[in-house]
Length: 70
Image 1 (tube, helix red, strand yellow):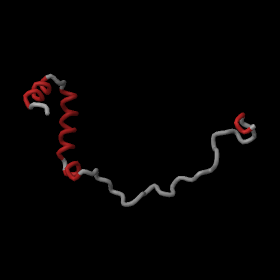
Image 2 (cartoon, rainbow, N blue to C red; image 1 turned 180 degrees about the vertical axis):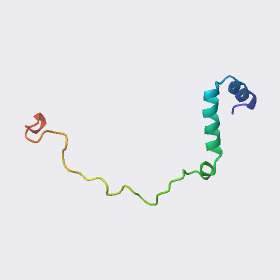
Image 3 (cartoon, helix red, strand yellow; image 1 turned 120 degrees about the horizontal axis):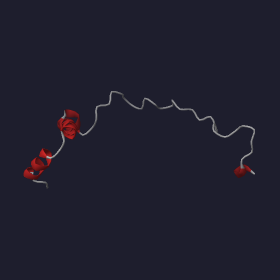
Image 4 (cartoon, rainbow, N blue to C red; image 1 turned 90 degrees about the vertical axis):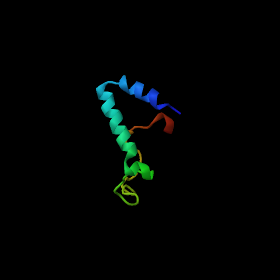
C-alpha cells in the first residue's frame, strides 16, 4: 500500500492542471454513486433494444459480384 507521505510528496510535484483533474477524480470516487458501486443511469431496462435494424449488406455495391461470391 502507498504511504501518505509518498502521495503528498508526489502531489506537490504535479502541475496545477493535473492537480485539478486529480481533485475531480477524488471527488468522483468519494461520491455516493461510486460508494454504491454503480454509476447513476437514468434509464430503466434497455432503451436501445430493437432500435437497430439489419438491412443485409449496405456497404457492398449492388450490381457487382464480389470475388468471395464467385
